[in-house]
Amino acid sequence: MKFLDLEPIARVAGTVKMPGSKSISNRVLLLAALSRGETRVVDLLDAEDTQVMLEALVRLGVRIERRPDGSALVHGVGGQFPVKSAELHLGNAGTAFRPLAAVLALAGGEYVLSGTPRMHKRPIGDLVDALRRLGAAIEYSGKEGFPPLAIRAGRIRRGANVRVRGDVSSQYLSALLMALPLADSAASVEVEGELVSKPYVEITVNLMRRFGVGVAQEGWSSFVVPRASYSTPGEIHVEGDASSASYFLAAGAISGLSGGGPVRVEGVGRASIQGDVRFAEVLERMGAAISMGENWIESSAGREARARGKLAPIDADFNHIPDAAMTAAVAALFAEGPSTLRNIANWRVKETDRLRAVATELRKLGAEVEQGADSLRVTPPARLRPATIDTYDDHRMAMSFSLAALGGIRVRINDPACVGKTFPEYFDVLAGISRWAAA
Image 1: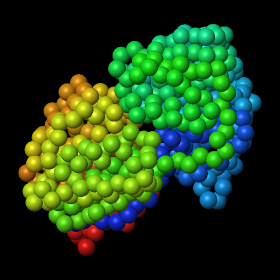
Image 2: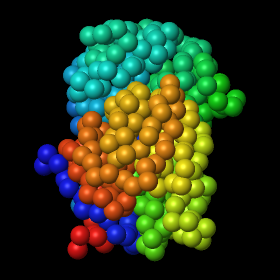
Image 3: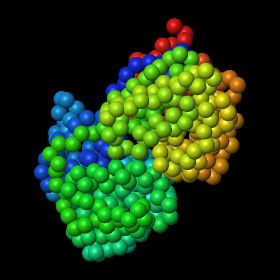
Image 4: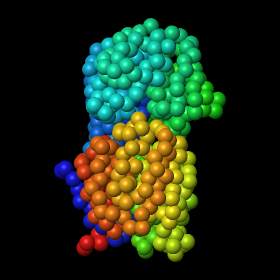
């Protein structure tokens, strides 16, 4: 399907069970593969990015059994992949490419890692530099500092102290932390600059602990990985995706302005290890009424927002939740004044240059947008304009901009299939809780 036309949505209300978290799913698959023993992974995300990781692990000699109930049984290899030479195509999955690059650099084999044209434009030089300091042998097959990569068996130093930049992508640090137990000696990592997306590193450290490796840290600048081997927890449950939950929570708040809502998401809640659950706090600042349990969150419009018929504008730092920040940018279209999203420079190295892409598509809808080096200021129009939204092969562009249909306009989403990266059923699920104005 080249495009999908969304009719104006009059209201949304209902309950949505979230698919598994991409960030947790791919970390768990890798750690389970590196562990001793078998791990049953429950509620694993079934989408393009996890399929990329599954296929890569199988090509590396890991036996993985998919079960009818959606779970997967991963037979761990105990830290040593049986296959010592392979070419892996990893699509545009950063949660697969960066960790696998780090792990394979310490695995004592020869590997070629490539991806889509967009992945070959996403920087990886800071991670490669850190791995080379450990003794890894990595060469660029194309442009310096970017994939594809050719990895050979290096001479890994014992007791290494390595530095990595933290201000481009937290995936560099997460990749190093997950790989270092393969170095067979304690190692430390120093972070240069401000670490972005800290909650994603928290996910990494939390999951490593559940697989038997405790990481010591001093704030967000220093981490020590002990000499330890991964061991299976036996069974592990993948939370619902908090980033994907943001679209439905925002929809509940926006629809509540005109009597719709509430919308409840299940599978993620107060007990979540994901930072994007804090998007609920952003919605509260915008006037949403939020309630939360251990495994669910519910959203509608608060009393004052309903009385105004508008959300409140915000001025906020989104460094900690960059993915959910895209949802906030579209929700800002329904505010009563300008909103400013700050500290989002790392949008530029995601699936697309999201700063440019979000600004471009918001303008199509009638918003005035001021784009800074690491910020967006969004002034909503008096009335939204119908628009054709380009998605740039970026799943989050498609999902976040679908919310514009709640503004009483028809929205055409180009390349809607791009949501297959993390949420293949997204548009069906949205339709399931929507009442269309055209009907």
